[in-house]
Every structure is written in structure tokens, then in C-alpha cells.
Length: 537
Image (cartoon, rainbow, N blue to C red):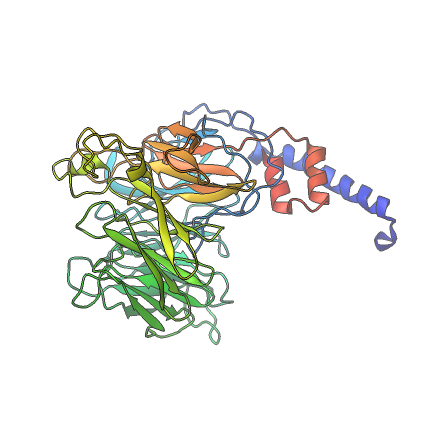
């Protein structure tokens, strides 16, 4: 008889069934707000419900395997005034995120790579409940090498966290924290983050590059199977290396990117030259493939970061070891052919370009001055740069440091004592999104570390209005002091890290009743996952 019910009866039945679900969920212990008696986290203070949330997961460095660093969906106004919670361990053991390493977040949990001050050199994968901040588990992983700030990846299909530390790739069950498998790739990983495919049927793969810079040897792109063994369709065990291919150049921090069956990777050099390259490979190959195409940088500077993919193109930014603020470049190349579309002078960086939803591009680069006080003209200040993309050409519209520099002696460069707005930086990956129709950028501030020391926790995080120039009032709209490393956004919640741990910021929104939430779901304005998330709060 269910199929013969009149519309009003069907709606009543759905309301009744979902009403029971609401009661069940609200009475389930796992979703109750915890009483923080162990000091491991600061509980949320009752944030409101967001009627329309953003994406359901932030699975990779830059958000996804294309590294667009762009939050999609309906983002409501964030609040950076007070963290909803701060996670620094389990109440007995302190875990502090590795400086500059990014966070990844799924529907339920926040994951980070962390160290324990009581165990110098040790590294751990950590998980917190993303709404309550409740500590869930910690798992030892091989130590990081050379201050590596690799970001983990979430293998959504297999419900596991992928971590690259030392020369080992480790897959960890997201619910229990128990390792599923680990693979030695034969060389160390430094700053390169792993990526995982989701669209290759029963042959999904993981890709990562090794570190080889300064050693003279060629870097290698490693392909690892993540799907179950199948004797005919996928004759590889989970964690088994499918192939490794030479990149014919050195590598450091070169996170691969993936789109529609092709994996793209940059290098820090090419044979006989400091010019970096971008290469495209067939991600579906079962044996080591040759490049589909290769692009060589137009200047003698290498790429020390990943690439981003958007609108049929691949974007990459370089790091030149000499020169001032506009010492390096950002390129846009055709995704299918590798042909150069444009190259624009930009700041040196290990971050990945951010393709904005309007077609323009943002780049984060520059080094905090405290790290090189003895070489003041090394010499590029931390900044955000805005590139206006006209399609076949592009123009650098502004550089936040140059535009705000108080150049007291009018010599056109920074000198000791001259002030400027310090945001962005060479190790920092911001996030772009829109609030209404306004493009915004969530960006941190690098610490001015001791001379010669490059790595430290970010000191601040800012929300920037990209419709304004750096010198205009309202360019900075929100600010928090105390954290600001490469962030993540899920469901309009902001996640970042600092010297105090993992910081979560809840969105601003008016309270919504369970009935209103239910109506949003019945009207098709939120998904079932979003309904479930709202009920958890």
C-alpha cells in the first residue's frame, strides 16, 4: 500500500520515520557533546546549524587530487574569533601537529601528522572527531626526514588514511587507527604528499614521488595499488607497488596531481638544467609508462611543489634560488598537450597555485624575514599574489607584500625595519571559496623564526576579501592569533593547526530546529549526510 499513499500521507510517513531517526541520533552516546575533563580538547560552545554546507570531505593536500585548494558548495560566513575546540592530545600524551603539514578531514574526523614533545623525532598519525574535538586515536608512523611537512591523504573508498613518512607509505584504518598495510618505496619522501584515485573501478591507485634533490639521482614516481586483489582484473595486493618510473629530473615536494586517468607531476630540475619540468603519465598503466608529454619551464628555475588542475589546464609555480620578490614564475599549460599558455613572474614558493572559480589564479610564496636576517636580499617577503587570467595571457595584478611595504627610503625593496603585511609564504597553501558572490581567501602567516631556521608553526590565520586590493579597507575581514598552518574546510568548518594543537572554527549561522533541518532535507536543500551531520551537533 506504500506506493498508493497520497502525497500528504507519504510526507507524514517520511516525517515520522525521520523523526524517529532524529530521536535515535540525538540519544546516541557517540554524538553527545563530551565533557572535557582531561584537558585534551576544548568543547564546542553550541555552534548553530548551517543550512547549506560545503563539501563533504577535504581528502588531500589542496582538498582533492587536483589540488585546487578551493572549497565548493554553500559556504556560510566563518568565524575566526574563538575556536570551537582545540585538540592537543588525549589528556595524557601531548601531540602537536608537524609545522606546515596540512590537515585532511572526512565526514567524521580530522587527521594530522604530529609529534610528541616527550619523544623527539617520533611521528604519529592522529585523529579527532571533527565536530566535538574528541581525541580518537594515535598511530606511530616512521619518523619524518628533513623537516618534511607532507600532508596525509584520505582513501575514502577503503576508509583509510594514507601517510607518507620516511621511505614508507602507511595505510591506517580510519575507525581503529590500526595499520592496514605499509610499503617501503626505496627512497625517502620529503614534503611530497600522496594522492589516491577514486574513479578507476577495481584498479584504483596511489601515487607519490620521492626526494632526490641535491643527490644527482633521478626522482621516481611510484604507483601503488589500493584495491582488493583480483586474479584477472587487478592482480595486485593492497599496498603492492604496481610500477615505478623515472622522472629524469630531481624532486623535492613534488606532489602528484590526478584527473581523468592521467597523473601529472613536476620536477625540481631537468637533465643538465635547473629548469623544472611537468610530466603527464597514464595512471591506468600496469607497467612503468613513458610520459604522455613533457613541459620544461621557461626560466631556469625548478618546481618544488605540486601542480593544480582546473578548466583543462595544469598550473605550477617555481622556486628560484636567487633574485628578489618576482624572482620565479607561475605557468599555465594545456592539460592534454603540455603546451605553454602563459608564464607570469611570481614569488618563490613550494606551494601550489590556486585556480579561483572566476578563472584567475592566486599564488602563496616568499620566506619569513627572520629566517634570513643575515641575508636580507635573499630576498622575497611572504605574500599572496593575484594573477588575472585573460585566457591566452595573464597579468600579475598585485603582490600583498609589495603593495603594503612601507618603503621609507623609496628604493623599491624591503630594508630592515620596513613594515609590510605578512601573509602567505612558500610553505603555506591557502584556501579559496565564496561567501554569497564574494571570493574569499583563507590564509596564514609564517612565523619569523630564528635566523637560518626555516620551519615553525604559523602564528595567525586571516580571511581575505579578494575583491579588494591589499591597501583597501576591508581586505582583511577576520583574524585569529595562535594558529594558521595550511588549513582545511568541511561543512563550512575551518580546521588549521598551530603550536597549541589542532584548531577548529565553527561557522556563523542562526540556530536551526530539528524540524527546520528535516524540512531542508525533504526540500532537497541538504543531503542525507548533511542531515546526519546537523543532527550530530
